[in-house]
Amino acid sequence: MEKIELENIINEQKNLKNIPNLKLVEYMDVLTQDFEMTKQNIINLTHYLDKVEELYENILKEYQLRAK
Image (tube, rainbow, N blue to C red; front, side, top):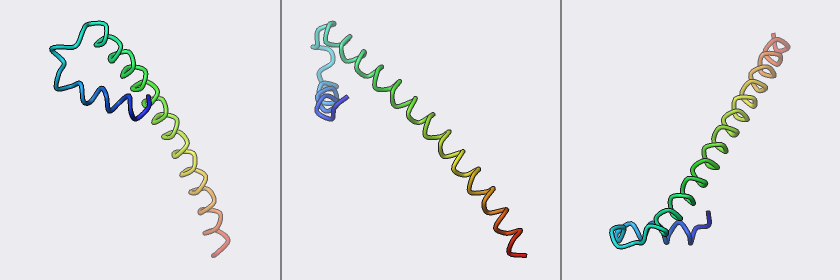
């Protein structure tokens, strides 16, 4: 979702009772898609961060063994 689109939905929050059902469904679809995409990105980044941490810890252990 583009920033302008999100801003439009946010601005329409004050006027939800007067928005036609088709527009409400459109907003829900856009928000659902954005939510799912964001959720998947967070999951992927979490896996990536865990792997980076694991690699760092492995390298640190080896470095500490060599420093002794």
